[in-house]
Length: 82
Image (tube, rainbow, N blue to C red):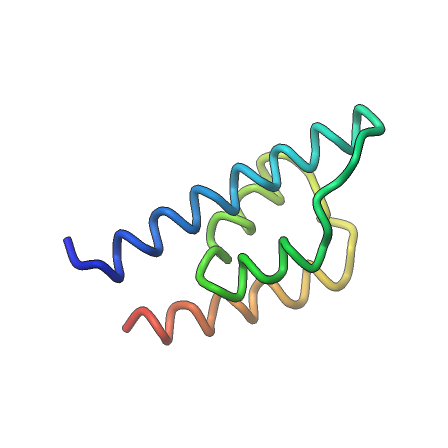
C-alpha cells in the first residue's frame, strides 16, 4: 500500500471514531468535540469516515452545514486521492 492510502484509511477511521465519541458526549451532556475539529478532519481526508458516521450514529444529520460541506469535502478528497 502506498503512504497516501494508509493516510486516508487512518484519518477516516479517526473521523468516524470522533463523530461517535461526539455523539456519545452529546447524549451524556459532556464536553463536546468542536465542529471546527470535525470539519478540519473531514477536509484533511476524513470525509468518508465523517459521512458514514453521520448516518451510522444519526449525528449532525440535521445541521445544514454538515449536510452541505461534508459531501463537498468528499469530492475534494476523492480528487486529491487520484
